[in-house]
Image (cartoon, rainbow, N blue to C red; front, side):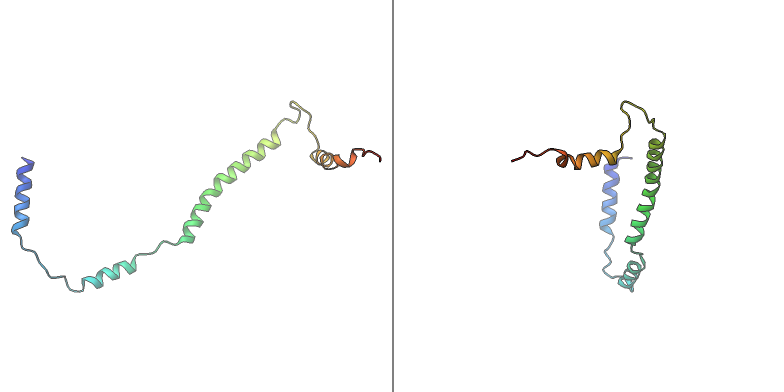
Length: 102
């Protein structure tokens, strides 16, 4: 079937049909009732759902990093150092230097 001919027939049928200016009874009340019954999205539930979805990957990453830190070889390229001793040496480096006597 020719699309141009079909379009012409549909437009002619639409133009021959009279326009009804009346609004159905209580149309606005039905529309307002439908709008009121639509549930508003709860922002707190959206946040809670997103946080619960993020919790599983965070726990998985935490377990992987924990296993990596416990199972990592202790030797390696350099011997392990005591972090507290390194920190104390760094902080007290200025005190350990001898000051020139006047």
